[in-house]
Amino acid sequence: FGAWGTWLARRRQLPLLASFHTDPKVVQRLKLGWFQRPLETIDRELHNQAHVNLATSPQMVELARGLGIRRMRLWPKAVDSQRFNPAAATPGMRARLSGGEPEAPLVVYAGRVSFEKRVDTFADAVHELRKSDAGRCLRFAVVGDGPALGWLKERLQGTPTVFTGFLEGDDLAAAYASGDLFAFPSDSETLGFAAIEAMAAGVAVVAADAGGIPHIIKHGENGVLVPPGDGAALAAELLRLVQDQTERTRLARAGRMEAERWSWTASTQALVTRYRQAIRVRNLARAQRQP
Image (cartoon, rainbow, N blue to C red; front, side):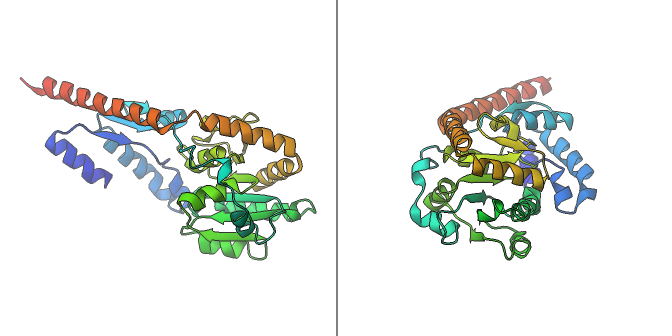
């Protein structure tokens, strides 16, 4: 679709703005590692047809530039902090996600359930936590659907994990806010909207130190970062925060305060500015081609 849209825009001499959202190494998680280099070439050739390219974090801007993509600019992050907020938590959702044990500490994962999201690392962390008495008191919830759902259910069989399937709207907001901790092991995020939404919901986030995640989570300030792909490290930080309510509350409040600064109004205004820039660049390129 990207190639088709690019072809149409160039054929009709329309201003073209493209957004870079996927780290090419994601194909390695899909067992398609042989396709990484061709994908990098395709990304570069298509994006370099655009008059302006956008990415949602400084890390992804630099990654794209490293691939040879030109005219890269930052598209500011945003979150609906009115929908995703601590007040969205409900006793009913807490009971549902905890498997009927709302008093137990609850760790939530929300997002696409696929291997590029490193759900294998999440599963490793759950089994690591089950090895200790303190960890066995935790309950886990997986909110979302995707091609790895069957594999993850089998991998976590026998653990206190609830699978809700796909949720949206108020139900999704309640799921975020009803947890004690949010686990986000994905190491291929260009931004990580699920982590931002969890922060807005007032839940402490433990995430992989990779991709665009460090752009939104400052380790020890508004969340915790762990080495990507390390289930033991993820488990250790989850357990530490379960046992330290003061620290967990501090991180949750700091994350909420940070998310409140990211309005969709400001983000959209920045996008409109980039559209206007694409028009100017197209007009300049057209003028240069005229004899």
